[in-house]
Amino acid sequence: MQPDFKRGCVEEAEADSLLIAERPAEASRTILVPQGRPALGRKWLVATVCAVAGLLLFSYRGNASVSAASLWFSQLWVDTQPWLQATMVYPHSYKKPDNVTSGWKMAGVNLGGWYCLEDWFFSGAHGRNVMSLDQRGQGACLPPHLNSLDTPWPSEGILTFRLNASRGSLHAASVLDGHRQSFIRDDDLQGIADIGMSTIRVPITWAAFADALAPLDQKIFGSHNPEIDTVIVPDPFYHEQAAFATIPRQQLSSLMRKASLKGLKVLLDLHAFPGGAQ
Image (tube, rainbow, N blue to C red):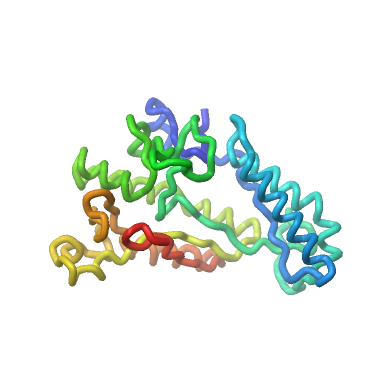
């Protein structure tokens, strides 16, 4: 049995023997992004197609995962490609992957849920929405070390705070670090490069630079080695509600080196600031 990659959770009995399974073939399908600008007379029509497709994607319901909806959305782009090709201006100097039709260049992909958690990525068999509809949240796990919870988590800060309060800082740091080490692997980066993408976007939290807050409290924010240590630090504005695991900067440096060797550019997106601001 393979885990549900969209929702993250696996049964506890499987967890020890199944950390990351081989992705199903359909998971490698991706949205094709047209390059260039539409002709002026057609721009409104392109926008309409995108808007309708987006609404259908986010209103998708049922037992099938969002990955299936993404596959449907990808197919929409493929099916409409001949019409779109006639209305777009495309660059001609790029290396086309074998499985991409002429006139298309895939630009990049967002690696969400890796260094900046969102609860719906890990909502298990009962997850239905691509955003939290209430403060309770949908997070049901965080593999490989946390495969079930009695209470769902709504955000990374609250999950980390709860783990720190209930099981201690070492356990909390281990859970977050285990996730980061296994969620995206070298073969994932290679697969991204192999299908012709040139850029990866990596959302991160402010905890990658928690040591910058050392002037506020040297013991809390400045006593760890920011290059190699994963430690738990409180949100400076909501220290009684949220906490984060620092992101060792050597991990980010290693990611950029590996990506560069595969011909990929890295966009580090500082996606979450102290206080929950984005």
